[in-house]
Image (cartoon, rainbow, N blue to C red; front, side, top):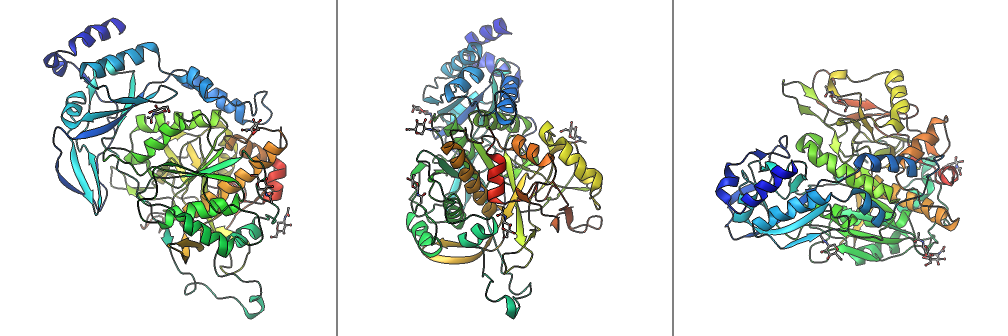
Length: 574
Ligand SMILES: *[C@@H]1O[C@H](CO)[C@@H](O)[C@H](O)[C@H]1NC(C)=O
Ligand SMILES: *[C@@H]1O[C@H](CO)[C@@H](O)[C@H](O)[C@H]1NC(C)=O
Ligand SMILES: *[C@@H]1O[C@H](CO)[C@@H](O)[C@H](O)[C@H]1NC(C)=O
Ligand SMILES: *[C@@H]1O[C@H](CO)[C@@H](O)[C@H](O)[C@H]1NC(C)=O
Ligand SMILES: *[C@@H]1O[C@H](CO)[C@@H](O)[C@H](O)[C@H]1NC(C)=O
């Protein structure tokens, strides 16, 4: 392979030979479909400069997975002994042959404007479209527009020269469209019973930080106190939070507990666009739950029309040696809209972060079990990624049983959850999921899901009826797992804060500890959510019903919602 590779490297200067040479498709299963709202606006000029992201093949991925398990599992000799970015680099950096092959290939095409990352496993290159089409035979770059937004993508699959097989995982900036994310807005008052007269003294008109703190047993003294603790949320939309909205939110809802009213670091670019409800929601609830903790916002809207904002965030994680310990991310795509090579590689990026002690939380999605037509025409559930990654902590959603009282929680029917069709079930959850499958009273037909896949979510929190301040105005009825995820992010950051105070390492990748904790029987650390079902396919067989919550773990609310003092006690392990 090495020798063959070199022979062709020389030939790359001769384009004719190379075009005739065998090609290889890194993402043969990557569908191209542009989402609703986008339309094609013509082919781009050959001179137009694109930004392509090359994911270079890493080394020692199996060893990384093993190290991640060891540093994240309480009781293991390596628990909490996280790797530095430099240690991750020396483990996963591409081989000399890979680096050499890729650099020679780029050089042969005169591509020099590239930026790498600390771990050497990504390259981001500026390439004129005409040259990119030669570099990636098959690709053809077109502009797509959606209102004021425009991106450049290729509706046709790309290939690489055969000699790059084994050296490149995928090339970003060709097929995947930027995330669409919308919180749900809904008014319950007309649908559910209003409070009884006797309850009027205690009722609330929607979720505020006071309601969150009351339900999850956070006292006013449960705030961060460690100077170098930190937390973050990541956003991939062309909308921004405004410091003034955050200040107004804290002014209205931040009474009683110490908190910060401004974000410390904005990574990426922020400030030109308009305020968005999703952006405001993340920051306002991360900072009122993880109160008084230094907060960063990763704002990657994609400056270049060909960038993939989510990939840009992953590159930043690999390029910064000091990062917040907790990241809350409300973003996802359908698993079936992504290639396996892409998802496998994104998983490795999560492993790299986890091995460094970083906790990554993803929203489980707002479509319940989801639904799509399989190739035979029959319906199946539709898992979402990265919610279905075995290397992140996935957060589902709940509602109060009584919408206007701080009461027990039930399933929020939108709560995303189910089983991955791509990733096998990780060992940390096998017994919990088996127990659910063997005891659940009403399971959907097994043809709708793959019971041997990674099952999610892992945890849940309230996702219904939040107050958010946007453009200086308090807005009610904001709902979705985009709300529950920053709340849990803040709680994990508070637990990290106590751990750091006691000289312990941060929690890192939470799932092994979480499943181990709950396996010991019903622990008071989490409120088990046992009522309600999520939505799914509207067909005669399942009639709109997905999985249902059940005692212990379930694929709608995971282990349940946090009881802060007990969860803190349980996770202050060495
Ligand atoms: C990574 O960081 C280095 C050093 O700060 C910088 O030169 C490089 O451009 C960064 N890479 C990317 C892809 O932004
Ligand atoms: C948490 O709060 C609930 C009421 O909201 C109470 O029943 C429970 O005892 C509290 N638990 C702890 C550990 O403080
Ligand atoms: C808030 O955090 C700072 C450190 O960042 C700490 O000095 C201060 O005591 C904290 N406030 C409270 C009320 O704990
Ligand atoms: C926190 O800051 C102290 C003092 O600057 C430093 O010794 C310690 O290593 C820092 N801890 C972390 C987790 O960054
Ligand atoms: C179910 O998932 C497992 C593990 O991810 C996989 O090996 C298997 O092929 C899947 N089965 C089907 C029918 O997709």
